[in-house]
Image (tube, rainbow, N blue to C red; front, side, top):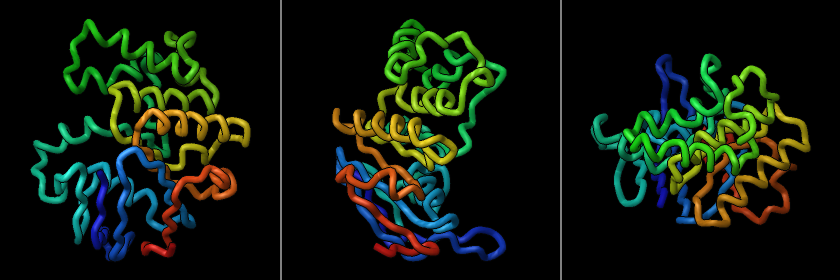
Length: 217
């Protein structure tokens, strides 16, 4: 499903975030990408999701080399993904419902189907009773759950999460990881970047460790 081959990423100014990284994720697998701050975890997820382009190497999703795809084709590919960003990227001037509905509206989903999809996603993360609230009134854990609802509302085949428990206390963090595990158990491919190795210990999922932009283990 996801094949990263000899990928490198160099940013303007010469900073090399990734160096000759190769990895593969099978359909329905749950994989954690670990490493120190600045190891390249976020960059790797952005390349897999087609948000950024590699400097070298290739990223293949479902048999399609997204490295050589035209920009017009990428939005269609991204419909296969749900992306949970490290900094949430919530719209604080809109309701919880409107935030969760946004991916469906952007992708041109039939409007009559949107309420059912949105409320099902909010129900899965325990926010159905807060659909009219503004994100600013939510706790940190609730904001993260809203991000997850927004990521799963289009029922993606692949979930990519960048440090989804980074700013949460231990109880909330454990709850969020349990949600991802539940999605994985129904066939969703899940890739999570995290520095919290203690949290994921004992889950039985495969771990890819990055060290200064290269695969360490």
